[in-house]
Amino acid sequence: MSQLTVADIFTISNALVLPGWVLLVVLPLWKWTRIFAAYLIPGLLSLLYFVVMISDVGSFKGGFSSIHDVGEMFRNEWLLLAGWVHYLAFDLFVGAWEVRDAQRLEVPHWYVVPCLGLTFLAGPIGLLAYFGVRAAVVRSWPGAEPPTSHRTPRPRPPVPPPARQS
Image (tube, rainbow, N blue to C red; front, side, top):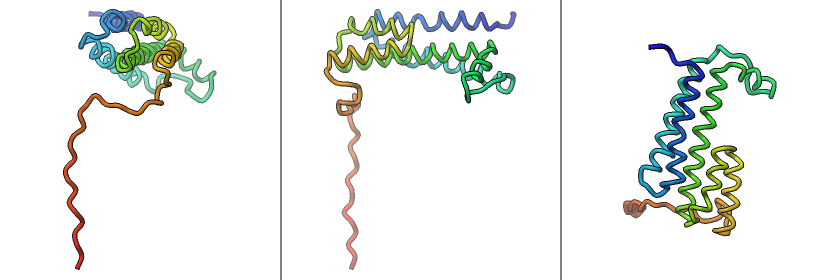
């Protein structure tokens, strides 16, 4: 069996992310959608990112201190692949958050679908679009409402009274 090339891994990564996006658009309420789109696929992509990054540590030029250094770093095709996988994982995770947040706030799913398309194609623009839809429907920006939890809080054990001093 031959070794996978950067182009092979790029193609596999792109194919891996697509089912998550389709599930978010077509089956947003299915219990497995959250598992695949928010955890499993981004988790696998994150693992791939980790493997690519640690396997190439020290063998690249450039860095993060200037735009020139970042450009120099991304001349390495393995680090360019890692950057792409980073985008794939984070954009899908953000799309899954948009769907969960919209469900929690009862934002109609069809309002969210265009935002998912934008998040898929241009991450931050899709997130910004979702913030706009959310604000228009809920009339509140993220973070303005009190935090909620779907979990039942655990009962706290009673606190014993302080010991009397004589």
